[in-house]
Length: 613
Image (cartoon, rainbow, N blue to C red):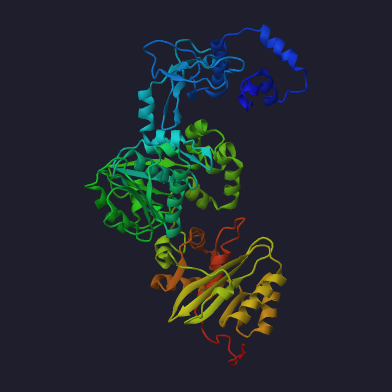
């Protein structure tokens, strides 16, 4: 069987031997002799193949098969799609043309694409179950009408006609449930990396091909996320069969538009915008990562009006972001403040995804009743175990287990951080890329070597407002290279102040740079100084005098800082240590944004003059 499947020539015995890599191992006459004497039924061979497939592929579920029975002999006036096709594997050597007689088949070709019959293997209850044996299975043949109805659904269209990176798309059960949800308001609390950005892009692509005049609007956390959804839809569209593609008439980074099939039809569109109310765009609205928007309530309020007359759906999809005060996603997902009866909710933690869980069926029942540590150990794949070891417990529960973590112990709440983030704030990759500054350039450097990363933050201060210009990490970089890079920055840019950690391993680096550059200020990381820096930064956030990039990891670092009062009465500001450090980038930023209090230590003022050029 393998040889005939892999043969690239007509189905002779010798071709099958080449395909099965048996040529030359035994004389071909032995194989000819075997096939000349052996006799078997095609039906019996098919039944044996189906038994093997049922035993290995359809235990406890359904197996869908696409079978090409074009060249199987059939007759009868009631056979569906009865047509005439040449048999491409029947040899006509030495015979007249009539020997290659057409055969009757029950498959038809449409737009040069083979549209096969489908069969479904389903469990049956006709026989009692026997311990130790597999389920009894029967074959159910689907009709062309059933096939057409299945392809006319979003889930059928995606599973039957779409692929990604040349691989067929296999939908998770929760993705199918999402696609089949027809309520006006869909509300999904999800883990990260479970494929919801992907599935909303596929849903919009499918509806654009299945409906006339359809419009989908994606609202995303930032502009890069908005472009990513269009890119996903575009790639899947390129891999669709040509016979099923609508003509693409608009193709940009934030919009796709498809030509209608017939005359008088309307164009179907997919639009993607960053986190702002989608004014004037009627249709289905998807609010992706809504909990992370600065203006989440305004975006939600503006979106509800757009589905009134269009009979569209409003979908809110997000990972939690703490119990944000006035946060609309948390308010609707938990209903702790009031009821939202028209919203249909769905919750998707990591253990429902086959890429993260080693046993989805058991985990769906048992995992919600277990503590985080135990369910990770029992059901988590290595990727989840690594994440659990890399994140503080509260962060892991929030990012991957749909937990709205209480943020009462965080010194910087999300409501304080998010208004100071800006989408589209472009950071420089190198010191030479920075344009000539309008204000003072100030920098902060938190030193790390083996366990933590060194972090550099460079801001421009204009009228008391700090605008981020560059953020750079040094992961296990030798101190000599770190010193050389900082010296290059100080020689290239007019840095007014570089505050550097001089505690512990940073002492030598701070002393060397301080001797060569008078604008370098060594800072001791002590409880009193940390309290002063953190308080200065909080005042700037309250006044909204900081411009930070809209980056989830950076926001998480700021939110991870906790203020604790020790039994001695001292106040500490710390973040839990992970394999990524302990909020090192945050400390570099607060070194930059600290209030300069003059010569607090006493002594004479020192003026340093350097001639550049």
